[in-house]
Amino acid sequence: MTKYILGMCWLFVLFSCKKENELNDVFLSNSPYENPSNPYITVVKGEQINCNIVAINIRINEENFPDTLNYTHVYIETPIGGPVITKKKRDIFLNARCDFNNEFVLSLYNKDLQLNSAEVVYFFKTNP
Amino acid sequence: MSIRLFVFNVLFLIGGISYSQEMADSSKGKMRVYTQSSAAVIYVGELKVKYGEIIELDTGQYVITAWAPKRKKVRELVRVGNKYTKTVRIKMPLTKEYKHYRNKKALYEVKKTTLRYGPMTAFIFYAANEMSVISKSNENADQFLTLANEQKSKAENSFWPSDIEANRKGFAISKLSYENEIEKVNDGWQKIYAGLAATIVVNYFTWRLSKKLKRPNYDEKPQLTKLFIGPDMQSRTTQLTIGFNF
Image (cartoon, rainbow over all chains, first blue to last red; front, side, top):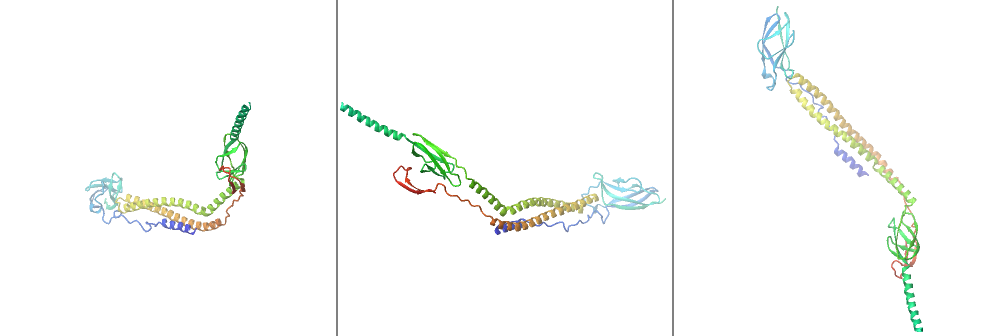
């Protein structure tokens, strides 16, 4: 009887194991591309064409994002009207409010996947 | 005339002797007895015979008495014909007392086995069921762990914010699911340990109880046991046999 019970106990001790939670101390860290220290797009020049139109030249800082990134366009949200989706880097004309500190939000854009990158904000004050 | 009469008388005497001898030979028959139990004690009249053995007997009626342990004593009237081998097959039903004993013994065995091995057997079934749940949860936990690690890596290396967000949510869900499965696994083991402890305690007492069960006994007196003295007719010799039938 004793041997029988001890045998059963031994078998269970042998085959049993408490499972440890391997994710107990695992937390997510931020992606370096989420809030980049160096922007992907820089507005190199901004120029008021008239009170409601602004023209900008941009530079894509390709050294700040992965080589494999397959963006297709630059996406610009303007204060008036819809967004501007363009492949141009120079003379991009944008609608703006007259006599107003306009906020333009720029990001890289993949048109096929409809994905936007982290944003860059550019302010331009139009004069009447 | 007297010679003729003498010859006739002699011939008649020879014929009569040979006829009576033939008649004497022809009034014999043979018999063998098969009983349901081959260990039966069999008597044909006062003669003890062996199971299936062929014996030669005078023609006439005989009472066959047979008895075997655990079986009823059986009597059967049999007629042995002239120059004929009679085969008798006797059914020997079990006695009521033996049937009663047999049932009591079976019940005793069931009780004893149940008390000794019942709790541990029940626990083994329970543990096997729990272990299948544990095994399934283990598999799920491993899958969720792999998925969570993949999603963590993607969330930390994705470029597109929507991908980052989707992978973050995915990681959170996978981590939660993984933790739930881990909890199930550890709960399962805890249940098994608790069940094992309870079973050992219960089994200790039931085992002791099983030792107190009284095993039923079966006693019977041999019904065809007796001292006999007589000629051994089976060996066809003239020797006298003194024996005791058990």
